[in-house]
Image (cartoon, rainbow, N blue to C red; front, side, top):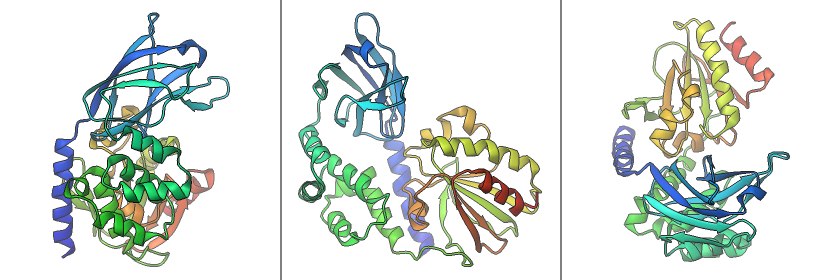
Length: 335
């Protein structure tokens, strides 16, 4: 039954991947750009820098996970490092959009074409907690509602699973099959599993390899494993790849195995974003497309490391990439 579940799950994911459009072009005018330092387009996962010309125009191609998607305009104060957002979350569904803004007038913008749900998105974004939940419930068949549901509930120890079940049950089929609909469905499936504890075996799961083939996370190869749960958008996770590259050189590959599991929102981001980091990977590497294992294992910090013995029993869990974590990983590999 589990095998059938993963085959069906894989098919749905591949359909989504093949239909995804992974780049959009954003252009327009930005007035008063010189007053805010460096300007960026935020796509949620990443900030992409913009160069504004002397006539106040700009054009930029940016990576996105799927369409529709949300973007926003941000500025970074180069002295303090503070990020300021000059627009609300803006929903786009076209391969090319025009965004015009005067940065002296916060949250005033012109967006063409603009999605019908933009007004709803801003209502939800700026609502208080109680009103926000009600707006999500009343408008669940919309991308903004599903997006804010994802942000509000999926990265916390949610005790309101009945609310999420009701939202999923009420979704039209198109929204159930959307990226955020599948995130919700997968989140609830993962929450039904009992999280692994120290001294217990990891449950068998299958994840995508680089060829988009489902492969067992844990191979029966009598090797102790270092599993790193990570994300391309996390600076600490990127830093951990350099350490793992050094570790890969030092370990006895007949006795130890390094595995990375990424929760990136698209295949392209997972495989190709920040190539100087991804090119370091010479070990087993997986994509947790809808965050099943991240949710099942309650991964709330990236990177998170698991040390697993030859019988797939969890020996230790460590969060972050501190000097203490590095020492523990070296010790686990008998280095």
